[in-house]
Length: 412
Image (cartoon, rainbow, N blue to C red; front, side, top):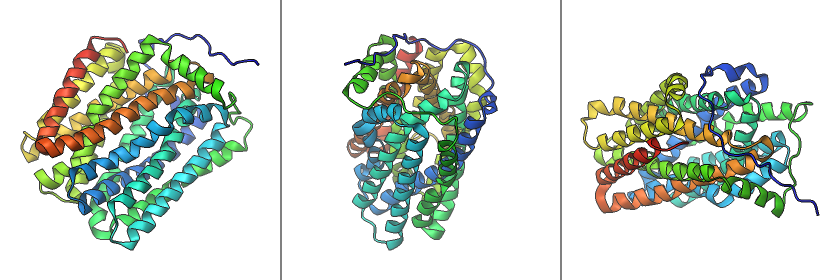
């Protein structure tokens, strides 16, 4: 029986050239997906805010609040490798259409549950897990699709653009949700997320019927799965990237996990304060999109990642120590570091292997990311039980700083 063997393509860092951030938008299909994804990201961030604050509002336990992040990323740990095989074997436009329809249905269920009132935290977490399952199957196909729509030298710029879309929505979604949550409750916010998938469904529907739709790739099966696993784990440099990814996200998830508790228990604030601080992170991340092309060309991936980790760690250290009026700019600086960290890791992962293996190898990268976030969410929730929220943030800042020193001295 013939076995498909992966091309022996070594891991190679991107060349040090400056590519304009907007250059990937010259590709029509990438531009359509990027615009539709911007609207979808707005809905996602609105739901992210609403679900986190809803659980923090109905449960006093720090562990329950941090389990929102664990429920979001645990499906990637469970299904991530399978998702990569499926993404390489099924026509991606059709696959992404089905996945987005599934996630829209999950958001509708969330809206219906919230509209009934007297919501149990377990039910909310179950629906968050359902949405996370859709994300687990979406991300390998999405990242492999978008990176294949641009030239190789534009992959890093495309990653920055996708980060810009994500983080622009991270400003508007929580800020809008923080205002509306008190007035109209969470149900309309979840309903808005369901409707926000409409643009993506239209684009994928049109793409499925076009001549340029990506076709079927490698057959789904054990050989296909093992080919991707061997290719991803066979490269020492890619294994190093996976360690950096898991470690970086393990520390960084402390911010998202602990922020609702920090606002509720330390600041004694309400939904608007939580949404405002989430939006500040997005402001910094959007600003970073305009700074990153020059920084990446000057520093290279390793030093840029190390600096980003160090700055994000400093932000975590500063949160429980600085006066309240200084919190917004501190979090915004952390947003710059967050965007630099994520786009650097994503760009490295997307440019590591050829198109025919990309979704399967990306699924290993996404598994490392999700594993760090899932374990980190559980750990920082327990740390908050032991040390209090300020103590957990200080510990997370020290972890990020130590990782930054390692990354700064290495090659990504």
